[in-house]
Image (cartoon, rainbow, N blue to C red):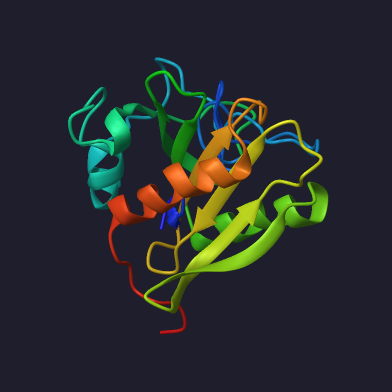
Length: 205
Protein backbone atom coordinates (compact mmCIF):
# COMPACT_ATOMS: atom_id res chain seq x y z
CA UNK A 1 0.00 0.00 0.00
CA UNK A 2 2.75 2.62 0.90
CA UNK A 3 4.91 5.19 -0.90
CA UNK A 4 0.99 5.43 -5.42
CA UNK A 5 2.19 4.86 -1.85
CA UNK A 6 1.22 2.95 -1.11
CA UNK A 7 2.04 2.23 -1.90
CA UNK A 8 1.58 3.41 -4.30
CA UNK A 9 1.86 2.73 -1.16
CA UNK A 10 3.48 2.19 -1.48
CA UNK A 11 5.24 3.11 0.34
CA UNK A 12 10.50 7.36 -3.13
CA UNK A 13 11.29 11.28 -3.97
CA UNK A 14 13.37 14.05 -2.79
CA UNK A 15 14.84 14.16 0.56
CA UNK A 16 17.21 16.70 1.61
CA UNK A 17 17.27 13.44 2.89
CA UNK A 18 14.25 12.39 0.88
CA UNK A 19 13.56 10.10 -2.04
CA UNK A 20 15.60 9.93 -5.06
CA UNK A 21 13.79 6.90 -5.97
CA UNK A 22 10.89 7.97 -4.39
CA UNK A 23 11.83 11.47 -4.07
CA UNK A 24 15.17 12.67 -2.38
CA UNK A 25 15.41 14.13 1.13
CA UNK A 26 12.14 15.50 0.51
CA UNK A 27 10.09 13.23 -1.70
CA UNK A 28 10.52 9.54 -1.77
CA UNK A 29 11.66 9.57 -5.35
CA UNK A 30 15.42 9.46 -5.77
CA UNK A 31 17.19 11.86 -8.08
CA UNK A 32 20.60 10.23 -8.03
CA UNK A 33 21.85 8.15 -10.93
CA UNK A 34 23.85 5.89 -8.64
CA UNK A 35 22.84 2.40 -7.61
CA UNK A 36 22.04 3.28 -4.00
CA UNK A 37 18.86 4.78 -2.61
CA UNK A 38 18.60 8.53 -2.53
CA UNK A 39 17.18 10.68 0.15
CA UNK A 40 13.93 11.72 -1.43
CA UNK A 41 12.50 14.91 -2.81
CA UNK A 42 13.98 18.13 -1.55
CA UNK A 43 11.89 20.59 0.35
CA UNK A 44 10.66 23.77 -1.19
CA UNK A 45 11.78 27.16 0.01
CA UNK A 46 9.74 29.97 1.50
CA UNK A 47 9.01 31.29 -1.97
CA UNK A 48 7.77 27.91 -3.22
CA UNK A 49 4.17 27.03 -4.05
CA UNK A 50 1.55 26.68 -1.35
CA UNK A 51 1.20 23.07 -0.20
CA UNK A 52 -1.77 21.53 1.61
CA UNK A 53 -2.22 18.51 3.83
CA UNK A 54 -5.63 18.07 2.18
CA UNK A 55 -3.83 16.55 -0.81
CA UNK A 56 -2.62 13.73 1.46
CA UNK A 57 -5.92 13.09 3.25
CA UNK A 58 -6.15 9.53 1.91
CA UNK A 59 -2.87 8.77 3.72
CA UNK A 60 -3.90 10.19 7.11
CA UNK A 61 -3.59 6.79 8.81
CA UNK A 62 0.01 6.63 7.64
CA UNK A 63 1.17 10.25 7.93
CA UNK A 64 -1.23 11.97 10.30
CA UNK A 65 -3.08 15.12 9.26
CA UNK A 66 -0.59 17.92 9.89
CA UNK A 67 3.10 18.56 10.51
CA UNK A 68 4.28 16.72 13.61
CA UNK A 69 1.07 14.72 14.16
CA UNK A 70 2.83 11.80 15.89
CA UNK A 71 -0.41 10.60 17.49
CA UNK A 72 -1.96 9.47 14.18
CA UNK A 73 1.13 8.72 12.07
CA UNK A 74 2.55 5.21 11.69
CA UNK A 75 4.72 4.15 14.65
CA UNK A 76 4.83 7.70 16.09
CA UNK A 77 6.53 9.06 12.98
CA UNK A 78 7.14 12.79 12.79
CA UNK A 79 6.09 14.03 9.35
CA UNK A 80 6.35 17.30 7.48
CA UNK A 81 4.73 18.51 4.26
CA UNK A 82 7.28 19.90 1.79
CA UNK A 83 6.99 21.74 -1.51
CA UNK A 84 9.09 21.10 -4.63
CA UNK A 85 12.74 22.03 -4.96
CA UNK A 86 15.33 22.15 -7.70
CA UNK A 87 16.65 18.72 -8.55
CA UNK A 88 13.39 16.95 -7.75
CA UNK A 89 12.06 14.41 -10.25
CA UNK A 90 10.06 15.88 -13.14
CA UNK A 91 6.41 16.24 -12.23
CA UNK A 92 6.88 16.09 -8.46
CA UNK A 93 4.37 18.49 -6.90
CA UNK A 94 4.96 18.03 -3.17
CA UNK A 95 5.79 15.43 -0.59
CA UNK A 96 5.42 14.42 3.03
CA UNK A 97 8.71 13.43 4.65
CA UNK A 98 8.77 11.39 7.88
CA UNK A 99 11.29 10.09 10.40
CA UNK A 100 10.76 7.56 13.18
CA UNK A 101 11.98 7.86 16.78
CA UNK A 102 15.26 6.06 17.45
CA UNK A 103 15.35 4.08 14.18
CA UNK A 104 17.18 4.90 10.90
CA UNK A 105 14.06 4.65 8.74
CA UNK A 106 12.73 7.48 6.58
CA UNK A 107 9.35 7.48 4.89
CA UNK A 108 8.10 9.63 2.02
CA UNK A 109 4.80 9.97 0.26
CA UNK A 110 5.25 11.88 -2.98
CA UNK A 111 2.54 13.48 -5.07
CA UNK A 112 3.09 13.93 -8.79
CA UNK A 113 1.25 16.01 -11.34
CA UNK A 114 0.16 12.93 -13.32
CA UNK A 115 0.27 9.14 -13.44
CA UNK A 116 2.54 9.48 -16.45
CA UNK A 117 5.10 11.42 -14.38
CA UNK A 118 5.05 8.61 -11.81
CA UNK A 119 5.61 6.00 -14.53
CA UNK A 120 8.48 8.00 -16.02
CA UNK A 121 10.13 8.23 -12.63
CA UNK A 122 9.81 4.57 -11.62
CA UNK A 123 11.06 3.54 -15.07
CA UNK A 124 14.37 5.22 -14.20
CA UNK A 125 14.65 3.02 -11.12
CA UNK A 126 14.70 -0.17 -13.17
CA UNK A 127 16.54 1.11 -16.26
CA UNK A 128 19.19 3.28 -14.58
CA UNK A 129 19.46 2.10 -10.98
CA UNK A 130 18.97 -1.68 -11.20
CA UNK A 131 15.92 -1.75 -8.95
CA UNK A 132 13.75 -4.86 -9.13
CA UNK A 133 10.05 -4.45 -9.96
CA UNK A 134 7.23 -6.65 -8.74
CA UNK A 135 3.56 -6.48 -7.85
CA UNK A 136 2.29 -6.25 -4.29
CA UNK A 137 -1.01 -7.69 -3.18
CA UNK A 138 -3.71 -7.42 -0.54
CA UNK A 139 -6.09 -10.34 -0.01
CA UNK A 140 -4.55 -12.06 -3.02
CA UNK A 141 -5.27 -9.17 -5.37
CA UNK A 142 -2.64 -6.99 -7.02
CA UNK A 143 -2.88 -3.36 -5.86
CA UNK A 144 0.29 -1.79 -7.25
CA UNK A 145 3.99 -2.19 -7.99
CA UNK A 146 6.97 -2.38 -5.67
CA UNK A 147 10.49 -1.23 -6.56
CA UNK A 148 13.41 -2.42 -4.40
CA UNK A 149 17.00 -1.17 -4.53
CA UNK A 150 19.70 -3.69 -5.54
CA UNK A 151 21.56 -5.80 -2.98
CA UNK A 152 24.77 -3.98 -3.93
CA UNK A 153 23.40 -0.63 -2.73
CA UNK A 154 24.65 0.75 0.63
CA UNK A 155 21.10 1.23 1.85
CA UNK A 156 17.62 -0.18 1.29
CA UNK A 157 14.89 1.64 -0.63
CA UNK A 158 11.37 0.29 -1.15
CA UNK A 159 9.21 2.49 -3.37
CA UNK A 160 5.65 1.57 -4.23
CA UNK A 161 2.86 2.67 -6.53
CA UNK A 162 -0.85 2.09 -6.04
CA UNK A 163 -3.22 1.56 -8.94
CA UNK A 164 -5.98 3.25 -6.92
CA UNK A 165 -3.85 6.38 -6.34
CA UNK A 166 -1.80 6.65 -9.53
CA UNK A 167 -0.25 10.06 -8.85
CA UNK A 168 1.36 9.06 -5.53
CA UNK A 169 4.42 7.08 -4.48
CA UNK A 170 5.20 5.71 -1.04
CA UNK A 171 8.84 5.19 -0.16
CA UNK A 172 10.63 3.62 2.79
CA UNK A 173 14.34 4.28 3.02
CA UNK A 174 17.24 3.12 5.17
CA UNK A 175 20.47 4.82 4.12
CA UNK A 176 22.77 2.34 5.87
CA UNK A 177 21.56 -1.27 5.65
CA UNK A 178 24.00 -2.33 8.38
CA UNK A 179 21.60 -0.57 10.76
CA UNK A 180 18.43 -2.20 9.42
CA UNK A 181 18.31 -4.86 6.72
CA UNK A 182 15.75 -5.30 3.97
CA UNK A 183 13.79 -8.07 5.68
CA UNK A 184 13.41 -6.03 8.86
CA UNK A 185 12.35 -2.97 6.85
CA UNK A 186 9.74 -5.02 5.02
CA UNK A 187 8.46 -6.93 8.05
CA UNK A 188 8.39 -4.05 10.54
CA UNK A 189 7.60 -1.03 8.38
CA UNK A 190 6.49 -1.85 4.84
CA UNK A 191 3.71 -4.22 5.87
CA UNK A 192 2.63 -1.84 8.62
CA UNK A 193 2.60 1.07 6.17
CA UNK A 194 0.29 -0.79 3.81
CA UNK A 195 -2.01 -1.66 6.69
CA UNK A 196 -2.06 2.01 7.74
CA UNK A 197 -3.09 3.08 4.23
CA UNK A 198 -5.90 0.55 4.28
CA UNK A 199 -7.32 -1.62 1.51
CA UNK A 200 -7.00 0.10 -1.85
CA UNK A 201 -8.78 -0.73 -5.09
CA UNK A 202 -7.21 -3.44 -7.25
CA UNK A 203 -5.39 -2.91 -10.54
CA UNK A 204 -6.94 -3.67 -13.89
CA UNK A 205 -10.28 -2.00 -13.37
